[in-house]
Image (tube, rainbow, N blue to C red; front, side, top):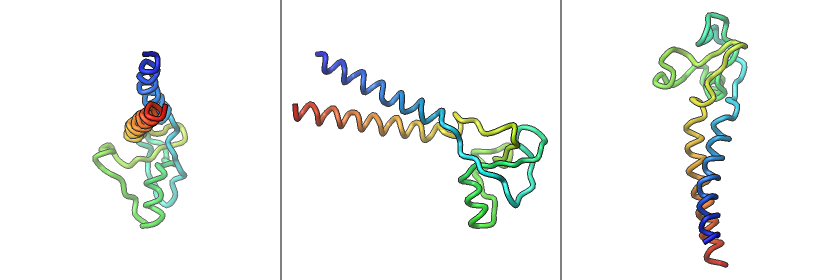
Length: 115
């Protein structure tokens, strides 16, 4: 009975912890080079952008971003502002929670069968 209770707690706590940790991690920003733009949140000159978007700018020479994700305009920010952590990390956080649940469940099953 205790083993089942511990397993249940682990199967709930591990994915929740993985979700929270990934959701609150910093969003990777890089300097904005080769493009003159204004911050999404104010009218100051934008100096930073998302790393994944900047890589496309460097390799293709074109600033490419998904307009459905950023309907207000280009994802660029000044030194005072930045992207919303929850918005940027939510997809990866869900994936981390699902993966950690699968790993914890598999590990529990292997321990249960071997012991």
